[in-house]
Image (cartoon, rainbow, N blue to C red; front, side, top):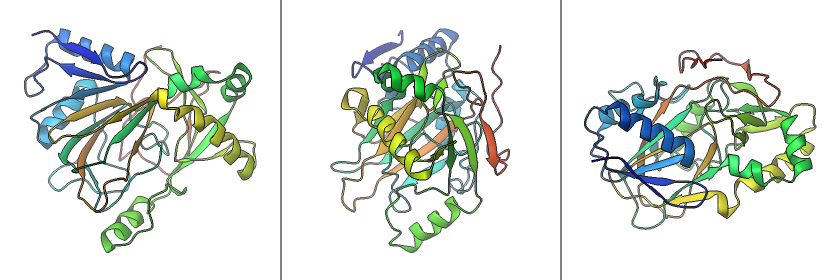
Length: 298
Protein backbone atom coordinates (compact mmCIF):
# COMPACT_ATOMS: atom_id res chain seq x y z
CA UNK A 1 0.00 0.00 0.00
CA UNK A 2 1.54 3.35 -1.01
CA UNK A 3 1.99 6.15 1.52
CA UNK A 4 -0.98 8.52 1.57
CA UNK A 5 -0.57 12.08 2.87
CA UNK A 6 -3.75 13.95 3.83
CA UNK A 7 -3.45 17.64 4.67
CA UNK A 8 -4.93 18.84 7.95
CA UNK A 9 -4.72 22.61 7.40
CA UNK A 10 -3.68 24.89 4.58
CA UNK A 11 -0.33 25.82 6.14
CA UNK A 12 0.76 23.00 8.45
CA UNK A 13 0.12 19.38 9.27
CA UNK A 14 -0.85 16.14 7.55
CA UNK A 15 -1.94 12.63 8.44
CA UNK A 16 0.28 9.88 7.03
CA UNK A 17 -1.57 6.68 6.14
CA UNK A 18 -0.48 3.38 4.63
CA UNK A 19 2.71 3.18 6.71
CA UNK A 20 3.45 0.19 8.95
CA UNK A 21 5.64 1.78 11.61
CA UNK A 22 6.40 -1.62 13.11
CA UNK A 23 8.13 -2.85 9.93
CA UNK A 24 11.41 -1.77 8.32
CA UNK A 25 10.66 0.92 5.72
CA UNK A 26 11.67 0.71 2.08
CA UNK A 27 13.43 3.58 0.33
CA UNK A 28 10.25 4.88 -1.32
CA UNK A 29 8.47 5.08 2.04
CA UNK A 30 11.35 6.95 3.65
CA UNK A 31 11.52 9.39 0.76
CA UNK A 32 7.76 9.99 0.86
CA UNK A 33 7.79 10.65 4.61
CA UNK A 34 10.81 12.95 4.48
CA UNK A 35 9.33 14.90 1.58
CA UNK A 36 6.00 15.15 3.42
CA UNK A 37 7.71 16.42 6.56
CA UNK A 38 9.55 19.07 4.53
CA UNK A 39 6.27 20.21 3.00
CA UNK A 40 3.83 19.93 5.90
CA UNK A 41 6.21 20.39 8.89
CA UNK A 42 4.17 17.96 11.07
CA UNK A 43 2.96 14.39 10.40
CA UNK A 44 0.45 12.38 12.45
CA UNK A 45 0.24 8.59 12.53
CA UNK A 46 -2.87 6.99 14.05
CA UNK A 47 -2.64 3.67 15.90
CA UNK A 48 1.14 3.62 15.57
CA UNK A 49 1.54 0.40 17.57
CA UNK A 50 4.88 1.43 19.09
CA UNK A 51 6.62 0.99 22.42
CA UNK A 52 9.66 3.00 23.50
CA UNK A 53 12.06 0.93 21.40
CA UNK A 54 9.76 1.22 18.41
CA UNK A 55 9.55 4.99 18.77
CA UNK A 56 13.36 5.18 18.92
CA UNK A 57 13.59 3.01 15.80
CA UNK A 58 11.14 5.17 13.82
CA UNK A 59 12.90 8.36 14.94
CA UNK A 60 16.15 6.90 13.56
CA UNK A 61 14.55 6.89 10.12
CA UNK A 62 15.28 10.62 10.17
CA UNK A 63 18.81 10.55 11.67
CA UNK A 64 20.90 9.85 14.75
CA UNK A 65 19.15 10.31 18.07
CA UNK A 66 19.94 12.72 20.88
CA UNK A 67 19.82 11.51 24.45
CA UNK A 68 16.61 12.37 26.30
CA UNK A 69 17.60 15.89 27.45
CA UNK A 70 20.76 17.80 28.44
CA UNK A 71 19.68 17.94 32.11
CA UNK A 72 16.55 15.85 32.67
CA UNK A 73 16.86 12.08 33.11
CA UNK A 74 15.54 9.62 30.53
CA UNK A 75 12.65 7.25 31.10
CA UNK A 76 13.85 4.24 33.12
CA UNK A 77 15.48 1.63 30.91
CA UNK A 78 16.10 4.04 28.02
CA UNK A 79 18.70 6.56 26.95
CA UNK A 80 16.75 8.55 24.37
CA UNK A 81 13.19 8.79 25.72
CA UNK A 82 11.96 11.80 27.71
CA UNK A 83 8.66 11.62 29.58
CA UNK A 84 6.44 14.62 28.85
CA UNK A 85 4.37 14.11 31.96
CA UNK A 86 1.77 16.41 33.48
CA UNK A 87 2.83 15.13 36.90
CA UNK A 88 6.25 16.78 36.56
CA UNK A 89 5.88 19.61 34.06
CA UNK A 90 3.41 21.38 31.81
CA UNK A 91 5.16 23.06 28.88
CA UNK A 92 2.39 25.55 28.20
CA UNK A 93 4.63 28.06 26.46
CA UNK A 94 5.44 28.40 22.77
CA UNK A 95 8.91 27.00 22.15
CA UNK A 96 11.18 25.03 19.86
CA UNK A 97 12.84 22.11 21.60
CA UNK A 98 16.24 22.62 23.28
CA UNK A 99 17.24 25.82 21.47
CA UNK A 100 19.64 26.67 24.29
CA UNK A 101 22.23 24.34 22.69
CA UNK A 102 24.17 25.18 19.55
CA UNK A 103 22.50 22.46 17.46
CA UNK A 104 18.93 21.84 18.60
CA UNK A 105 17.18 18.68 17.42
CA UNK A 106 16.11 18.63 13.79
CA UNK A 107 13.06 16.42 14.42
CA UNK A 108 10.88 15.74 17.45
CA UNK A 109 8.64 12.70 17.85
CA UNK A 110 5.85 12.52 20.44
CA UNK A 111 3.92 9.33 21.27
CA UNK A 112 0.70 9.41 23.30
CA UNK A 113 0.44 7.01 26.23
CA UNK A 114 -2.11 8.64 28.54
CA UNK A 115 -4.54 11.16 27.05
CA UNK A 116 -7.13 13.37 28.66
CA UNK A 117 -10.94 13.14 28.44
CA UNK A 118 -10.97 16.72 27.17
CA UNK A 119 -8.33 19.32 26.27
CA UNK A 120 -4.64 18.48 26.35
CA UNK A 121 -4.03 19.37 22.71
CA UNK A 122 -0.62 20.07 21.21
CA UNK A 123 -0.38 23.19 19.04
CA UNK A 124 2.28 23.32 16.33
CA UNK A 125 3.07 26.51 14.41
CA UNK A 126 4.74 26.93 11.03
CA UNK A 127 7.48 29.53 11.55
CA UNK A 128 8.22 29.75 7.82
CA UNK A 129 4.66 30.88 7.17
CA UNK A 130 5.08 33.35 10.04
CA UNK A 131 8.20 34.77 8.40
CA UNK A 132 6.41 35.13 5.07
CA UNK A 133 3.60 37.01 6.85
CA UNK A 134 5.98 39.69 8.13
CA UNK A 135 5.84 43.10 6.43
CA UNK A 136 8.94 43.64 4.28
CA UNK A 137 10.64 46.13 6.67
CA UNK A 138 10.16 43.77 9.62
CA UNK A 139 11.51 40.83 7.59
CA UNK A 140 14.61 42.83 6.71
CA UNK A 141 15.16 43.73 10.36
CA UNK A 142 14.65 40.14 11.54
CA UNK A 143 17.11 38.90 8.91
CA UNK A 144 19.84 40.99 10.53
CA UNK A 145 19.33 39.97 14.17
CA UNK A 146 20.84 37.39 16.54
CA UNK A 147 19.19 36.17 19.73
CA UNK A 148 20.44 34.41 22.86
CA UNK A 149 18.48 31.36 24.05
CA UNK A 150 18.92 29.90 27.53
CA UNK A 151 17.45 27.24 29.82
CA UNK A 152 17.76 29.74 32.68
CA UNK A 153 15.08 31.98 31.18
CA UNK A 154 11.46 32.13 32.34
CA UNK A 155 10.25 29.02 30.56
CA UNK A 156 6.67 29.62 31.75
CA UNK A 157 6.07 26.44 33.67
CA UNK A 158 3.48 26.93 36.41
CA UNK A 159 4.90 27.44 39.90
CA UNK A 160 5.93 24.03 41.18
CA UNK A 161 3.19 22.88 43.55
CA UNK A 162 4.46 19.35 44.19
CA UNK A 163 7.80 17.79 45.09
CA UNK A 164 7.90 16.08 41.68
CA UNK A 165 7.56 19.39 39.85
CA UNK A 166 10.09 21.09 42.09
CA UNK A 167 12.61 18.33 41.37
CA UNK A 168 11.94 18.56 37.62
CA UNK A 169 12.47 22.32 37.68
CA UNK A 170 15.73 21.92 39.60
CA UNK A 171 16.99 19.36 37.11
CA UNK A 172 15.97 21.47 34.11
CA UNK A 173 18.18 24.39 35.14
CA UNK A 174 20.88 22.42 36.99
CA UNK A 175 23.50 23.03 34.27
CA UNK A 176 23.21 26.43 32.56
CA UNK A 177 23.20 26.63 28.77
CA UNK A 178 23.17 29.62 26.44
CA UNK A 179 23.39 29.64 22.66
CA UNK A 180 23.32 32.51 20.19
CA UNK A 181 21.20 31.86 17.11
CA UNK A 182 20.01 33.87 14.12
CA UNK A 183 16.49 35.23 14.58
CA UNK A 184 15.81 33.97 11.06
CA UNK A 185 17.07 30.47 10.34
CA UNK A 186 17.52 29.10 6.82
CA UNK A 187 16.24 25.53 6.59
CA UNK A 188 19.12 23.33 5.38
CA UNK A 189 16.95 21.16 3.09
CA UNK A 190 14.22 23.44 1.74
CA UNK A 191 15.96 26.82 1.90
CA UNK A 192 12.90 28.32 3.61
CA UNK A 193 13.42 31.09 6.13
CA UNK A 194 11.72 30.71 9.49
CA UNK A 195 11.57 32.70 12.73
CA UNK A 196 13.83 30.90 15.21
CA UNK A 197 12.68 32.34 18.54
CA UNK A 198 10.18 31.02 21.14
CA UNK A 199 10.15 30.52 24.89
CA UNK A 200 13.89 30.04 25.42
CA UNK A 201 14.77 33.29 23.61
CA UNK A 202 16.02 35.75 26.24
CA UNK A 203 17.54 38.76 24.54
CA UNK A 204 18.36 40.08 21.10
CA UNK A 205 22.04 40.83 20.70
CA UNK A 206 22.70 44.57 20.87
CA UNK A 207 19.32 45.47 22.39
CA UNK A 208 18.29 46.11 25.97
CA UNK A 209 16.15 43.63 27.82
CA UNK A 210 12.99 45.69 27.44
CA UNK A 211 13.58 46.37 23.73
CA UNK A 212 14.33 42.68 23.19
CA UNK A 213 11.09 41.68 24.89
CA UNK A 214 9.05 44.14 22.83
CA UNK A 215 10.53 43.06 19.50
CA UNK A 216 10.34 39.34 20.31
CA UNK A 217 6.69 39.83 21.28
CA UNK A 218 5.94 41.41 17.89
CA UNK A 219 7.74 38.66 15.95
CA UNK A 220 6.14 35.93 18.06
CA UNK A 221 2.68 37.31 17.35
CA UNK A 222 3.15 36.29 13.71
CA UNK A 223 4.13 32.74 14.70
CA UNK A 224 0.96 32.29 16.73
CA UNK A 225 -1.53 33.55 14.16
CA UNK A 226 -4.34 30.96 13.95
CA UNK A 227 -3.71 30.42 10.24
CA UNK A 228 -0.21 29.11 11.01
CA UNK A 229 -1.24 26.58 13.68
CA UNK A 230 -2.20 22.91 13.76
CA UNK A 231 -4.22 22.08 16.89
CA UNK A 232 -3.88 18.34 17.45
CA UNK A 233 -6.23 16.46 19.79
CA UNK A 234 -4.63 13.28 21.06
CA UNK A 235 -5.89 9.71 21.20
CA UNK A 236 -3.83 6.94 22.82
CA UNK A 237 -1.16 5.26 20.69
CA UNK A 238 -0.63 8.04 18.16
CA UNK A 239 2.74 9.31 16.92
CA UNK A 240 3.35 12.95 15.99
CA UNK A 241 6.53 13.91 14.15
CA UNK A 242 7.45 17.53 13.50
CA UNK A 243 10.37 19.46 12.05
CA UNK A 244 11.87 21.23 15.06
CA UNK A 245 13.93 23.50 12.78
CA UNK A 246 10.95 25.38 11.43
CA UNK A 247 8.13 24.99 13.96
CA UNK A 248 7.19 25.95 17.49
CA UNK A 249 4.82 24.00 19.72
CA UNK A 250 2.70 24.47 22.82
CA UNK A 251 1.02 21.95 25.15
CA UNK A 252 -2.34 23.40 26.13
CA UNK A 253 -3.02 23.22 29.88
CA UNK A 254 -6.81 22.98 29.65
CA UNK A 255 -7.51 19.53 31.11
CA UNK A 256 -7.72 20.27 34.86
CA UNK A 257 -5.85 17.68 36.94
CA UNK A 258 -6.28 14.71 34.60
CA UNK A 259 -3.06 12.81 33.90
CA UNK A 260 -1.41 13.30 30.51
CA UNK A 261 1.70 11.43 29.34
CA UNK A 262 3.59 11.58 26.06
CA UNK A 263 7.03 10.15 25.38
CA UNK A 264 9.46 12.26 23.37
CA UNK A 265 12.40 11.15 21.21
CA UNK A 266 14.43 13.70 19.25
CA UNK A 267 16.83 13.51 16.31
CA UNK A 268 20.19 15.29 16.30
CA UNK A 269 20.31 18.45 14.22
CA UNK A 270 22.64 20.79 12.40
CA UNK A 271 24.08 24.06 13.65
CA UNK A 272 21.58 26.71 12.47
CA UNK A 273 22.63 29.18 9.80
CA UNK A 274 21.26 32.67 9.30
CA UNK A 275 20.45 34.61 6.16
CA UNK A 276 24.02 36.00 6.18
CA UNK A 277 25.53 32.52 6.34
CA UNK A 278 26.67 32.93 9.94
CA UNK A 279 26.31 29.88 12.17
CA UNK A 280 25.00 29.67 15.71
CA UNK A 281 27.44 29.65 18.63
CA UNK A 282 27.39 28.02 22.07
CA UNK A 283 28.03 30.69 24.70
CA UNK A 284 27.60 28.73 27.94
CA UNK A 285 27.64 24.99 28.58
CA UNK A 286 28.81 21.90 26.71
CA UNK A 287 25.98 19.71 25.39
CA UNK A 288 28.14 17.13 23.63
CA UNK A 289 26.79 14.45 26.02
CA UNK A 290 23.31 15.25 24.74
CA UNK A 291 23.74 15.45 20.99
CA UNK A 292 26.16 15.06 18.13
CA UNK A 293 26.20 17.62 15.35
CA UNK A 294 24.60 16.69 12.05
CA UNK A 295 26.88 17.56 9.14
CA UNK A 296 25.25 19.32 6.21
CA UNK A 297 26.69 18.89 2.73
CA UNK A 298 27.76 22.14 1.08
